Image 1: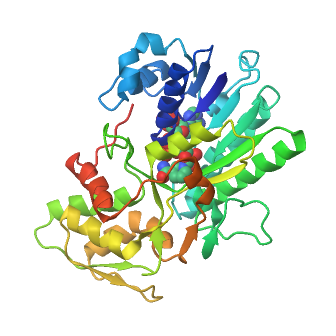
Image 2: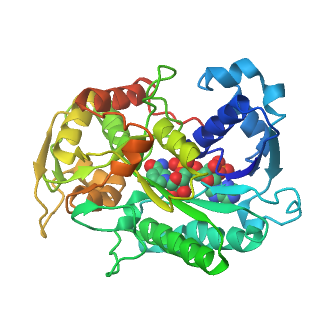
Length: 374
Ligand SMILES: NC(=O)c1ccc[n+]([C@@H]2O[C@H](COP(=O)([O-])OP(=O)(O)OC[C@H]3O[C@@H](n4cnc5c(N)ncnc54)[C@H](OP(=O)(O)O)[C@@H]3O)[C@@H](O)[C@H]2O)c1
């Protein structure tokens, strides 16, 4: 079997890489994982992948196998996706193409729009157009939030709707646009495809190796990070008002579960779209209380959305002019849930209760919210 993977240096892609290598170790036939990754500073793509395969957080089964042996399954293509050429197309004939690279940026700023669209949609279209003649199937990692603002129960099909979804930011719009492009092109070409959509990715929760580990702290972790450092900096805590819809929740799903589902699903031809999400979203009010308790910022109030919100102090201003601005659309959105019947039948969804959520935040706090940049 041949698999091509993009985004292997990222939060999710690294775990997809781990799962694929585990699968190859278990299988006893000739398998190759082609990784398209770019260099960063002095570190080549190979250096970066080697770092991910030989660190404290690398799964034991891979560490036991050893770097040299793992490389028997690997071929690294050192390139930015924006400049990729099809010079290796012969080698990847009949491969599964898993496209996990993306630009996760929930910014609502107008001046970020074009970059967010280009890094997600433009690159996806370009690599699809370059590689589709050679591959067996295109697997696109979307986002459950490409559903847009919806209420009630959301099913797995986002592309046969009788309405146009309204998106909260450029990222959701670009991901939805890319999903649509892949679905339409593949149908036209008769090429099998899959769109697999995680919700907000949280730390590991399966098994007992490196529980709650995550490479980079994004989305809700960034809020925790903001108030963790604010609590440490200031003696007196100013009152911060969080504008929320008390009914709504944030859907969070552990990174190792997402990766396992992707690797369990990519060969299935009965699944074209699948949301990889929790069966219940984590209530926003509860989530904020737990985060603030964990980071030790106690002076806050939860309020309803109001049109005449004026900052009352510097911390409110700093929060709402940075991470708060981009998170607000998620905190005030209409409540919804996802239909997880099919997902749960593939692998049981781990339960994210209050204790597990607090542990995710604690894990990050104990590491000072320091990302691992390979
Ligand atoms: N994180 C979430 O909560 C979340 C939730 C739902 C869906 N998703 C989706 O899941 C996928 C993976 O996200 P993630 O969380 O793993 O993001 P991430 O940690 O930011 O990783 C992004 C990956 O994409 C690579 N990449 C981006 N642009 C590239 C380019 N031009 N050339 C080569 N590589 C490029 C990055 O490479 P470098 O390391 O070189 O930058 C990195 O490996 C994305 O499609 C995202 O939309 C993420």
